[in-house]
Length: 187
Image (cartoon, rainbow, N blue to C red; front, side, top):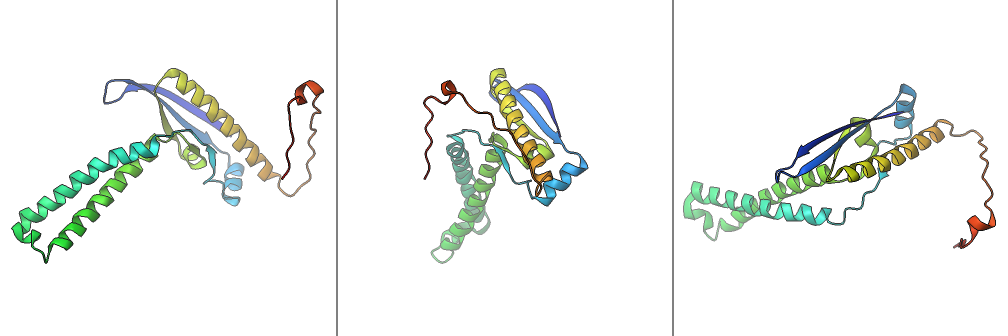
């Protein structure tokens, strides 16, 4: 398993620097077979802490909802005149306008979520994905997190390849200094 990086730099719409890390994992045929056999493609390798991501998605989706709703409503009024606002047709116009606006807002929110999330899934690395960072320091830290996640995934792949056989692992004994303050809790 090989992990490939490509770093680039650009600017966002506010002319601020954005650092991009493109990452892709190359698997050999045996690793692909294991991946398919154990259905590991949907696994999550790394969960990023992005507490405002959902709020940002909603913040972006709300204006889209409003604009699309008004566009569809005015289209109905322009096409059918004020008859579109008559009591008999008004509910249908509102349902169609609202439905179209909800679909548009949901698509925009999904796309924003997908392209700005920093969590890493197995499919992201197999297909290749770009991750945006606001600074070089954040990019380097994200690279390290990604390497840890990929090494954990490589361990899962190796364990899956040897499934069913016996394994022996030597566990080192900790000394008193290492164990001080450690409490074992069993439930």
